[in-house]
Length: 436
Image (tube, rainbow, N blue to C red; front, side, top):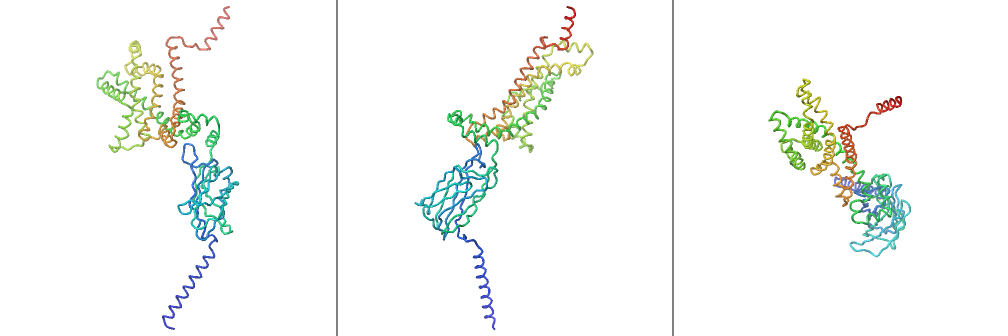
């Protein structure tokens, strides 16, 4: 046998092997090899004030598929994972042939986690099927949800190709409250008023209270971390301003007047954009603490200075007569009385500093107002800003009450009309009773 015959025989064997392999693969493929191809399955976000799809709440599912060659689609059945539901949903059925809408109609029947759509006549090669299902529910536990199911073609039931996963989040207590509010007549009447619906929407107040909480903690963290440094700096510059040395007084005067005389907004911009230009890169929250501490220290310096100068000159003279030096007098006599007198004013300044942290949102610090701004841009509603105001009031109103109580007690004490100790009052009553 010559080489040519051998080669031809080998080629015949290879060809036969390829044909056999192709036949085997064809037999192994499911009957729906030329199947109804799932194009897409998307869900409309149903988070009030957000962009997520929440399980257990009504949403809209849009499902599309195309009939392939050899198909004659008579009906389609969509299936959701356990916990999902098509009950009480409505379905808009659209069939397209190319770019033109066809006359083929359909009827949808929801039953639990299944939705069956039957067409008035079979859909053949090239038909596009679009189902827009409103008020359906994904499983409450959330997760990656795929829409599967079956379809009937030429009298044979075939498996549908699973859709791409739809990411859903669990249904929380907050979303349950929002869903309950959505169905309340008084809420609908409230939101129908243009002003109330824009600034005081109940559903957004509920979601904002939880969404803005991290930003509120950042605000509190910044002011609580910065204020001790501000108190120390303020006390140092107050002592410098009442010092007998002209240079120290001059430094203190310049420091206090510049910081008090310029807007905090400008100081924030200088720190946040100026330091990086000098290759000093610090975390934004740390920078926020620094700029708030420096700004508050200037106001506290004046508060402490006024408190020191309010102490009568006789206090200094009495301390001097006892042989106490200037430093001893200041530490042991003057400063304790000063601190007691300035507590209300310092508390008021703390309130102001807490509110001023809102300016840090202008440079990207993720504090309360920055969270509110982001949520407002998503919802197109001003309610998140109003909710941020509630968070500020949670801190400021109790502190205002504390300031009022402290001021009253200090005033009574200075007038000598403070409450007497209960024990002494009781002893005095007993003595009077014995005398009678």
